[in-house]
Length: 332
Image (cartoon, rainbow, N blue to C red; front, top):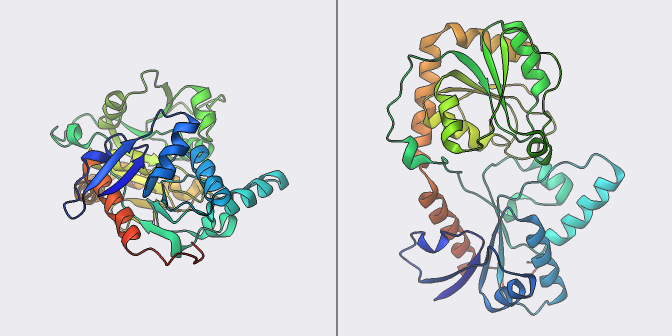
């Protein structure tokens, strides 16, 4: 039996019939307890938590005799934009060299390799999940109240390009944002300027998946505008929920878009106001085209399912590495 520790609360319920696993959840463990758990485990899986990941990398560097295998899931990184940022990226890259495998939800690794030294030799691609899939899947699709173009989500949204594109497109739109402090923490800005008369600003105070889905249900299409320099899969959870709700998705190109999707969404160049406005106008007036894109997106969302499938894939990929790990004393 393999002892696994992780900050996935439900990982112990993941299906992996070929391998008996003893899972310990360390979500709220203190630092000393966390270190003790790592040293007693065979496999450490850390989801998103970059602070703990770097602590664990440092532990492996300071204690080279440790035998646990370290798996990072959904590590979200940004390109450095200053001398200080480049130094921090270099330090992170050095620490991340102690990670055995990175499980990511996208395939375009050019930015991660350039700035952090994370290449395809240490990355496993696993498709993301549809948040709230079990609830979304059972509700019927209704196109009778598709009243606006929706821009939603909080991480690195290029709001200025969306606003300018909507001004040119001329059709009704809603800019759904969360509280400004939450947006800042995820690299986005709260809109404070004037909006064209066809675009309405709505602040989501509830911050719940249910309220988020209700806004999406009333949209004719969902737009995810991204920045040109993005190196991670920004917007993936938003577009999968929109696809599951059978909405036509328009997304800027970048990791998590053209490297993962084909015809399940309309992909436009990032930061291109004219191209975005052109696609919004076209899709707004072409119900058949919207329906075709949305249907393909829905099938894609169905193929991914929810959390249970995702955790099973993560556990399977992690255990596969344990069984095929390089010999002791190699680079990893």
